[in-house]
Length: 186
Length: 406
Image 1: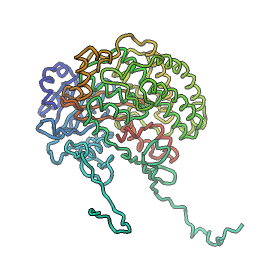
Image 2: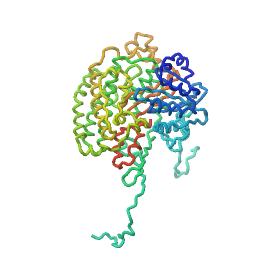
Image 3: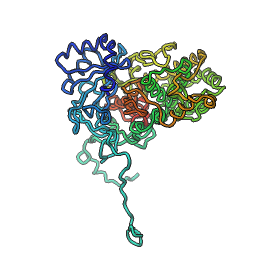
Image 4: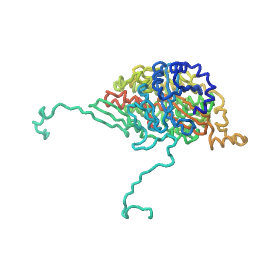
């Protein structure tokens, strides 16, 4: 996504330069490879998975982002990016009525894994289960990671772009009739 | 009277002390007080709840996935089906998110009309909540009174949009059509009478000692827990946080209205009830202000590639005809980008996270449903409470399963 809006985001540096949270994060995580985007008055920060817990704890404890509004797994298969999965976290500070988004790119496309943020915001529990169920992202350290929406024995992850929606396997069971089992010839 | 049991069997040795055993009890998914298809798996010791685990997913219909294969306009009716008690709030969240991506703004008159309808929807939703919540606690009369008022609202919605519940009335850049001529007077009649009705409900419940004993001090939640669990809306305001998106992050001209945010301190079931009752009075105030201050001017935004031209124009304007054809066949391109738009739905923070790849269909839609996060509080607030309170607790969270499972 950002490869397409990058030009616009770079030209929209005003929000980023003046934002106190962006300045604080830049100062605290100098050595890390962070990318900042400002788009439609919204700020998002792309961070590597290894920094996720540190940045999350920093934002909660020192920048007062007390609530995780949601997190969502995004399958970027059709977006011409060098990675496939990313997870978007949206945070809210009640006192300043301020929102910020974190984006974490999963390193492994075949087996996307990220550390769980349940220890930082306990409300992440359901949202991570949802992302696991629908997009297939594993959250390490989650207390009870299980499929919450799809039925038992469901295969595949429906919100992935390569999930086959054209057909659905239906299990038939034939009841034997007086003439025996129905066959194709009849 | 002979019991048929010999006397000597009743000595202490054979009977022993009454043992306590942990019991698992499944409540739902077909249970009238779970407000939909929610299953709650309870661990009980006697009548005390030791753990409470909501099991969801019985109503998962893949709405978000479904929206990815529809154009931006055609995806709109899907949003009604999520929170079916507040369809217009869902419409508004989605429409605002797409408008933000497109860079168009609704006209002032359109915003006022949206505010009026959304506040009526809030009344509608709170009436269903109040009726069913009171019914769960054994007060049948309130239920009938609430549904009597709700019927009047549904009639207004039906007249204005054509459908009672799944309205789909808002459109990107405006609304579906001009409201019918008597719409404003119908709203006025309803709104004028409504505060008296709220007084009636309060007389039946707030002053009722049985209701108060069931709800006061029951199943409380603290401010810190509410923050951590992602709880928003009336439940958060009942534990002392004055945060309302209408006030703190205004959208759709809400900054022009004069209203208060009801806040309570204890965070128990009674406070949640009390916050919602006060919210109904505030909503009535906002709706009345929107009605009286309804500005003049155009209803639809000036965006010919997104908003279809009125029918009269098509017969003599070639360009309008072309746009009309394109809007309804292939849709309109939405600039690439990501947007997260929040609104205050009757249940809390309703957010639409939309990723667009520049095409005519949303690349990814994620709905931040308030009930989904609020349900998370159930296991927290029902620990160590009595089993009878679980029903009251579920009612006080005000869940809609269509929105949780999506």
